[in-house]
Image 1 (tube, rainbow over the protein chains, first blue to last red):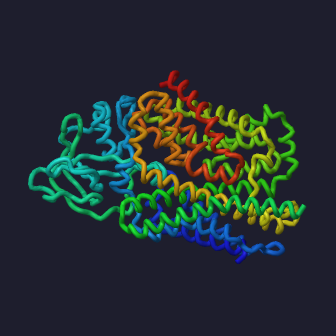
Image 2: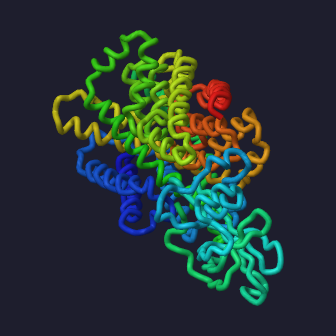
Amino acid sequence: MTRRTLRVGVLVLWASFFTYLWLSDAATRFIGPRTAWVVPFGAIVLVLTTVAQVFTKPQGDEQSAGGTEVLGMILLVTPMIALSAVPDAGLGSLAASRKTAGGGIAALTSILPPDDPNHEISFADIHWASESEEYAIAAGIAEGLEMRLEGFVSGSQEGAGRFTLTRFYIACCAADAVPYSVTIEPPEGLGEPGGYPEDTWLAVSGQLERSGAEYVLVPDSIEAIEAPKDPFLY
Amino acid sequence: MDIQRSDVRSAATSREARPLLAAGFLVAGLVLIGRSLGDQAAAQTFVIIFVAIVVEALPFILLGALVSALLEVYVPDRAFERVARLPLGLQIPGAALGGFAFPVCECGSVPVARRLIAKGLHPAAGLAFMLASPILNPIVLLSTWLAYSGRGLGLEMVVGRALLGMILAIVAGWALGSEGAADLLKPRSDEGDTSHDHRSEQPSERRRSFVDHLSGDFVFMGKFIVLGAALAAAMQTLIPQSLVSGVARTPIVGSLALMAIAVVLSLCSEADAFVAVSFVQFPLGSQLAFLVFGPVVDAKLAFLYGATFRRRFVLRLVIVAVPVVLAGSLWFEAVIG
């Protein structure tokens, strides 16, 4: 096999993969909206490069591909092999335990909610409201606020029925995901008696209450849901 | 002459083969482990981060390869010779400022810098361009402003990032680029495919040469990005960030910790500010260190640099970059923080 043939093969695979990501919703598993343009860009340029490479005449004698080249090309398509081997890849409670949520004491006074009238209060807002009263006021977060959260169960359960619900926020891709969690405190008789397994996706509706400085959600309904196609918040 | 060239190529192939062999086994092992674990959380986490980094980085490699091929085939050598005749004191800052006009992140700037140096630009100037463009380009500065404007610090962070990035690029370019191009750049085993005469005036010849250079650079750089992404994903899967962030309350330790986190995360510089702004437990100067160090040194870049440059380039770059970024971040903390 020549180097050129090998190269065309790799280009075909990557062009197909990017085209699939572009034409399906699959790219949202990996990439956020801020950098979503890389997928159509990659698909178009890779397809054009592949077509151009196929239709340009090779120059002179072509060199045969050595073992190193073959190995290099296999390496280049490893992401696709890995994804085939673990098709349900995703971020869950293990990743949440490895990554650090925003938080702490410095600069909290300068953190403010987005200046957007359509901004929907979610995990990060509740996290910041627990850290900063100024944030809570600016975001309109207070005890008694009715809300619905969708997320996955993470972390060990701290008491009878109490658990944390988590979502990842991404800026660019899954590598920069930051987990934000909200504590759920179901009243007696609501929820699974034995607790929910980690990574179970739930929709929880209820009212915000304070538990010390922290805002927690006291639900009036909890239902198991399918993991959404786009698991991230932005 | 031909024998010498063949020997050089063979030696380069052998040198490339060792890390690639190791990498091949590593990645194959990881995939096999993932396969056997099936639904295990570690495999799921590793694969999603691994693929996400590659999907995000490869189009930038492609963009860099596109510009690199254009430079190689369509820009006449005399243009580079004119620039190369300028005094080095002008070339280095001029090249660093060129980063303002090149809107790609760090993965794209490496093939372009390699091509610029190979075409005659002074290595110090080529390196200054490579290190500056992922920090100074307009998209990066705009995203920095957007990320920090919510905290009323948009302008300060943009100016701090641009200034410190520029200083780092000039200092590191000058310190690491004093040797000749042949001593700095590694020969590539695949260059036999793309080093034919592209100066032919025949448009069809030029088109073929352009396509060969574009696809050659893409597959060459791409495999090292895959390797770097595997390393970054493995570190993110295995090492809790709290190990580092838990000890990071003072400006010096905070800056060093966020530089370490930048290496592990291997983020694209066009979006890293949105992550940096969430590290509010760190001093502002440390966040600046994250924003300047990350685009210059990270896990995925280490492999790309290793494939492009000779003589422990990554180690020498770290030795230069850490003190410069640390000093700059402390100064920024003292003035703005």
